[in-house]
Image (cartoon, rainbow, N blue to C red; front, side, top):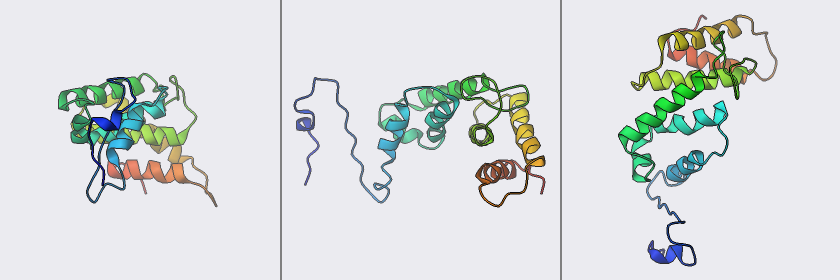
Length: 169
């Protein structure tokens, strides 16, 4: 047995501890702990900004219960993430880790996936920026070489484009 009471925080300074309790069939995934860990990402590169915001698209009720913000705050955080990653979008539609540049196709697919999902959830993603992101994925795929191993970034980009109805097969 376990009792979740003030004794959990014994020996800690008041206000410095936090506990989450997960029960039920999804407890093995421990979504609250994963969401909290993502929320504490220390840096702010494009991948981390995206990784902090992506689950908020689906787990806003969990974020609210954890004190990470109600619907308005969650929507605001998603909007801020969209704005931030778009400051790192190059003119060709690619995304850089810390600034607008290109060079990592997996990152392009990941950020484009986030923008696609945010847009589908009703968040504002500027049309031009979104079109450039999709065009960038298509352009990469048009010049992708055949491969005997790897290809995860190619598969990811194809999945994003297919979900948007924009994949040329």
